[in-house]
Length: 196
Ligand SMILES: Cc1cc2nc3c(=O)[nH]c(=O)nc-3n(C[C@H](O)[C@H](O)[C@H](O)COP(=O)(O)O)c2cc1C
Image 1 (cartoon, protein in one colour):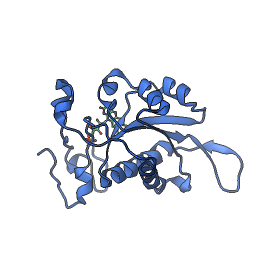
Image 2 (cartoon, protein in one colour):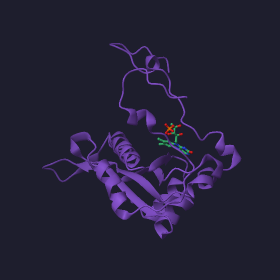
Image 3 (cartoon, protein in one colour):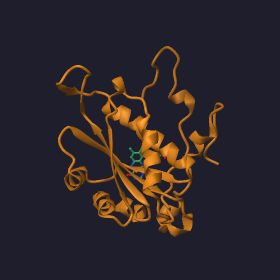
Image 4 (spheres, rainbow, N blue to C red):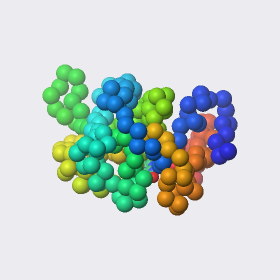
């Protein structure tokens, strides 16, 4: 077992992991909206809510558009996902009472919080998620029509977890929950003493 809690924690945090084997089971649009609803309630800087999601269900042109932007490694397993989501963020925002768009320094941070909410909601519904940074951002921007002023942060595969054996041999070895660095290497009291 690679996952052991160092302190008492809600089990959902250590039970979530990112499989690559999916069954191909279809997800409904209504279920997808529950994932986005969870993301919708994430906290953000001045409640700017910079996250934007573009999704495609398996078998749709939207799915194919996102899938085609993935690097070959990710295409090798994400083809059985039931949905792909392009997670984008608005890089500027307009403060209440003003009309001028100004850079939003925390758009990526805030959108990361929203993605985690989405991932945990999916898990609670029996779906699994797997984020991917391995995609051609220019191609994805073009095919989805993402304009300037928005960043594409990652692509998320959603699916029902499948058997490890259905993956190519090289991926089967990696199909298990991984570990984490110890708390002592990421938490300090009062003084930043980390060298990396
Ligand atoms: C922004 C981001 C990009 C990632 N990119 C990829 C990727 O391109 N391909 C892949 O197989 N996994 C990718 N992952 C999955 C990570 O490798 C995985 O989340 C990490 O090893 C921790 O494992 P866990 O999610 O199973 O807990 C990515 C995860 C994140 C959050």
